[in-house]
Structures are given as structure tokens and as C-alpha cells.
Length: 67
Image (cartoon, rainbow, N blue to C red):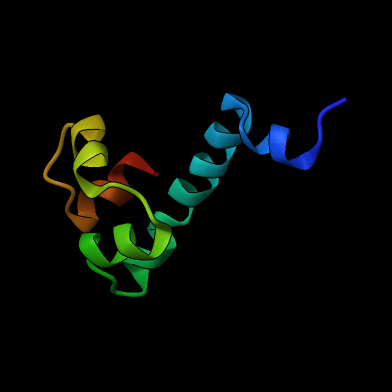
């Protein structure tokens, strides 16, 4: 049986945690945070998400992609 520490190390846990963070981006954009502020507060790498979106990571593009 998995303990909490082992569970947090699974790829599934990491993916779900990241997905939850990404789902908050439209709200943070509406609140007026910049992409840099969002990345800092959510503890995500701005550059890697710019590439995954294949966009300039503007607030409009984030809403368009519904992340």
C-alpha cells in the first residue's frame, strides 16, 4: 500500500497537481496578474508552458486556450 510520500512521487499525482494549477490561470488573468506573476505564484516554469502553448503567453492567449 502506498504511503503519502510514495503517492506524491507518482507521475499521476504530479500530473493532476499541475493540471489543477493550470486550471487556475484564467482566474488569475482576470485578476490582472502578469504571466510572470502567475508562474511565480503557481510555482510553474514560464518558459516550458510558453512552449507547450505554442504562443506568446499573453493573457488573451491563455483564455483562448482555456488553461
